[in-house]
Image (cartoon, rainbow over all chains, first blue to last red; front, side, top):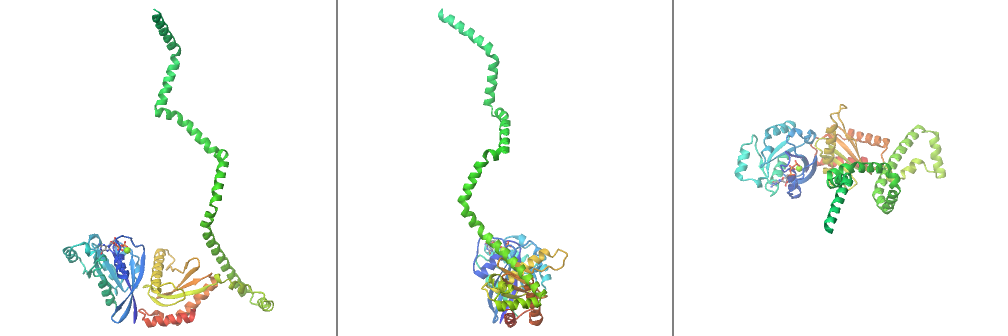
Length: 162
Length: 276
Ligand SMILES: Nc1nc2c(ncn2[C@@H]2O[C@H](COP(=O)(O)OP(=O)(O)OP(=O)(O)O)[C@@H](O)[C@H]2O)c(=O)[nH]1
Ligand SMILES: [Mg+2]
């Protein structure tokens, strides 16, 4: 049976949301930084637990704080992928406030926290960053090499299909 | 002694000249200084130049007007084609839009008229049309195919998530799921912008392209989006709106919060039944 779910990619600007989106949907990566204006919606169909899951992905423009994002983009979302940049502390310094805000407006939503650009840092650095986070980091990815990108979206898909 | 004498004369003449020309010398000296010093020169010439410029400004049309006109004319003639190429698509669009609007208004007027004089007169016209083959203006207008309203596609989209609840589509517009998502995002964006106004909840009702329009009707949990082609009159819009409301009343499945593919198929079928 076909199922459709709305999934939001959010986080500060420049953390790699569009890159993860493009890597997952088109298997592409671009070194250039073209900041997202507003929102771009696209979809990918994946097989999850005998279902065809239409993942409707909303790649939204990054904001330094989540309460700056137009509320209506979040409404009705089934899942949220919150991305931060492992190389830039300012993208995870307010992570607790951001995640609490998201959980508050989407009490039923599934939230995944992702540290991106892992290709730019050492495993020790990653370990250091995520062990000091006030929240649990679900996965670390690289949109550039593609590492863990597929598993990030698939695990989200699986969590959304009951 | 000749030379000596000559020298004396020369010297005396020089003295005499000095005495006689003393004033002029000083003047020449001063002039020399003025010419040699840029600042000095500028100080003197600038006012003259300024005067000149002012006078050219004032008299430009009389002095150069003809010449300029001739030049411009020449250039225009040369670029006639270019200008036309640049302007005509725009003109075309403007004229089309204008005519479309006029026809829309005309259709509205006819509608009103027909309602008004639903009477003897109308029958008279209809019968006349039958007998003499004189075309009813409405019929005539309906022949202007291009301006006739046509429902190309119709979507039902979940209001917050933008997920598709059903669709009936005749145009090849790509993935309808993505259409639903993007349209919802656009709608949300505008509604966010205007929500500060004190007129309550704002709804995007119409998106207007040149030849296509997207008409939207919002319900509590979902909204309809109809892609229309041609000119839409107020009464056509009302008719469509009534039809959508009725559809919404009849189809309770539209309110399903997590629609299954079976729901979507069912709703899509119903849309086709009602709007194709
Ligand atoms: N090395 C490396 N660079 C990355 C990675 N992901 C993204 N980038 C680069 O980071 C920059 C920003 O990436 P985007 O995907 O545009 O970031 P974004 O989060 O969509 O930014 P906004 O749309 O402005 O919010 C781009 O130059 C990308 O090439 C990664 O995993 N590794
Ligand atoms: Mg982006």
